[in-house]
Image (cartoon, rainbow, N blue to C red; front, top):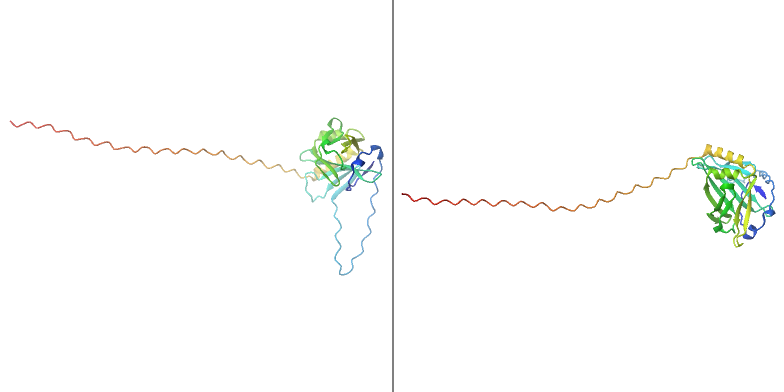
Length: 254
């Protein structure tokens, strides 16, 4: 198995997935390419050449079989750095798998991205051996032309356990249409603790805090039931006028 520090898009068939792990051998990373010769000056009147592609990372350091990367400082991110390992098939120079681990300082948690070849049984998920904290049946989020992705958040206990299993571990997937045959994908842990410490230190110095989610909207107050209209009070009727008292008959004169 060759551990490379660069990624290249690929499509890996189910047939290649079922090849045995013994077909891979450990090999040193390829030497970096020589710098290109300076381009000749364009002729007078010609349109200016396209600008050279700007680097994506301000830090790109090899630590053992891992590479520690940080995005440009102009990019504000809660997880600006990661540690990456890309495994290459030595026979056909195809990428077999990649494992990226990023640290989120404001949450003290880790974001993990794993890419494996297409042609896996998605419903079976992926297993990453890490002792008592192994990831079992991790679900695939999506598949693209370059492979199938597992993206998840994990805690410190899982990352610590991963670094403590020895010099190597493995991921396991199930090939599609292979009657449940599992395929191991090796992961080298050479330099893992050092790369992890370096990546976390850089992330703490560069990360921005994850914004807190907005509070849920306040519940609308319950509508007040309408108050029934009260009938107007009855109008008091005037009391009937008193009748004049009847006069007594006058006595006859004597």
